[in-house]
Length: 391
Image (cartoon, rainbow, N blue to C red; front, top):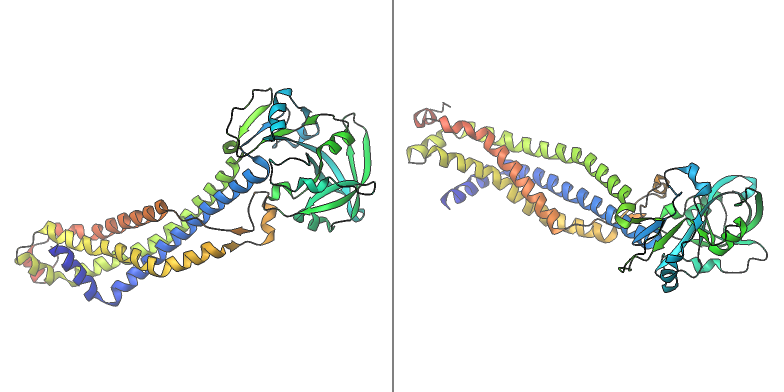
């Protein structure tokens, strides 16, 4: 207890030098918590959006479908297995069909993915019921807001759509935009034209066929066995976790630079303190303080920088982090071109484990940094210290 009081008085007596070190450490502490919270929030939001819109609790893929092989897309469809019928009737599973096509808005050609979904489905959080309308003889289709903006069309506009049916024959019809969908999931928006599944099956002459089956996110019952491969939500969102992990690893360089600058200040302060307080150390040793106790004293002084830095960061950082958590960080719309499920506004998530882990990490590094220059005091002789020398 005596050492603790003495360490506090020494820090207090150092004046502005102490507060500068504490302030620099608090900035490093706050930056680490903020960036890690932002990465955690990005990952959790992206997974929640994917689960809510198109992935559910998992998906069944037909044998030919491979999202990473575009050459397989023309044949990526098969007859829906009968074992899925009970779950389809219960409303916990819905089929989705992908088919390649092209559209010609304003006499411009654009390759698109024709996506068919049952207009009565409730598994995916999408306004598919809007596609079940009469369109004056046109094919009723639904676009995402990003897709509509990229081809410069609005609700009610008409454009020509072309595809190659299941028999290999080319066909074309005029399509009418009956609804423009607003969604945070750009992967079901950009480059996609949605229509009712029955209509897509009819114009492609692929009756009762689909590419995948999406399982409702709330379904926890037993899943049927089929010749279609099942992919869980964890497997489907692996790319999101890998991206966030890669970004977090890159951010570690930034953490390292901040911590290095802060720890350098602590290290220099310890070296300067040992050099200027030689006579004080000799006096303490002459009064009976052992070398190990002296080392503990100076190491404790350095460790207290981390304690006060955490307190200071909490005082001015907590309101800032709370405000950021409420407002979020709005990203430009160009972020949709990444091809990832990234919401326009990111909301960080700060957990107790994140804050405590950061505090512990900062405290350990500060303590080690404080101890390194203090080790030489183990060889210090009281007589040399009283004369202002370092033995």
